[in-house]
Image 1 (cartoon, rainbow, N blue to C red):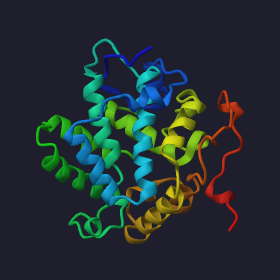
Image 2 (image 1 turned 180 degrees about the horizontal axis):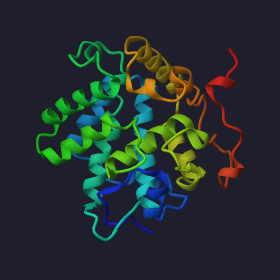
Image 3 (image 1 turned 135 degrees about the vertical axis):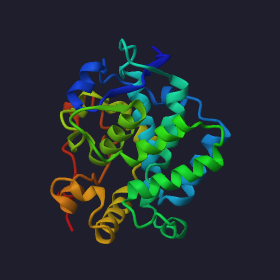
Image 4 (image 1 turned 45 degrees about the vertical axis):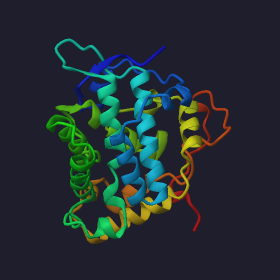
Length: 279
């Protein structure tokens, strides 16, 4: 089995409708298959270096994991060939996904460069989106307006969801992957979208082994606390339950513990969330 050559460029934003348009099965995808996808252009390297320079180490590993989570969905049945829907080639989509995932949390950085950026007072999605836009025009000048627009818009909208309408393939993969990495199989993601139907535990285990969670929990928590304190009207403030509701979603440990030997989602141990952590 290989990656399909093309995918639906636009998919339903509604969770159940998205699943109905797909043939996704939680099939095991070896990390060797995912890591073999070429990401070797100068523009790819520039986004990797930019994200690594600006992001806290745990957040950087998070954005890389998101890329591989998204690739796994392209392998296991992401909508493709739907009559009347424009198609996007695998190489093009994987390129857009790489830039989007690697750059999507620039607004969570506490580096001087990020905090002094003119957009620093905006909600982190917009803040990071502006920085990604500027970076791409410098580091990837060959990208056209449609490509840059899809990448940046997917960053800006990745924490939002809608019950109707369409998302680009890049956008929904960015959103689903980011929310899954934060909350795991039991986390709150796109309404009506059951993560247990999307990823095989062994796929997740191998991605987390290659890019461990490290200090992501604590670094993400610090970024969110800062966001809510400095920007009470941030997009994340609309999450049910506000700051507490949002941060209770954050996993403390791996989604799938290494060597868990889980053959399916039911085989996983109980998940650890912030509200169960002992102070």
